[in-house]
Image (tube, rainbow, N blue to C red; front, side, top):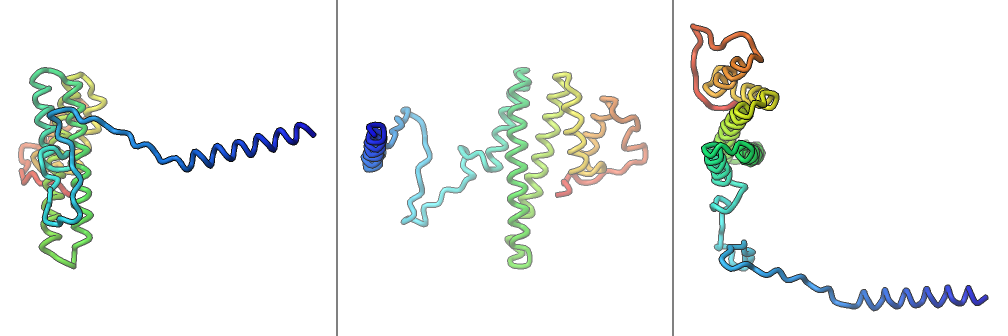
Length: 201
């Protein structure tokens, strides 16, 4: 009998504690801002003309953000810091690929509704796909410099698939495969033709 009373008392006490805790207001963590750092400020919804495009230099999801990563990779290559260069180029590839996919989706969404907007998004999709393939080629070269052909080969094949073997970047990628010994037929042959360097996408 005493045990049943003790259990009931414990339950009531436990429920009381939970009730008290639920009434307490949550404590918000305060993060101190380091001096000289520029943290993003929220956009005021009451000021619709206060537009801040994501093409600012501090945004990663932009063509400028991808270009910045490629430049940092080039500096790392110059310093022969190949692991950092590979990391930066991989990040640039991801940024350009995301942008290309987003622009393609916008192109599809506006197709037949507003051709001006659709064409603009298509051009941006092509530009970012080209930049993605160029970053991919540079990444493959970095892997070659690190004596990692097993990482370079799949990247080179992706470029050929995206660019087409007859375009400049596609030819360069195939030449790398030939130099690595992955393929044994040279391309282009003596009568090969050249064309533009636009990607398929």
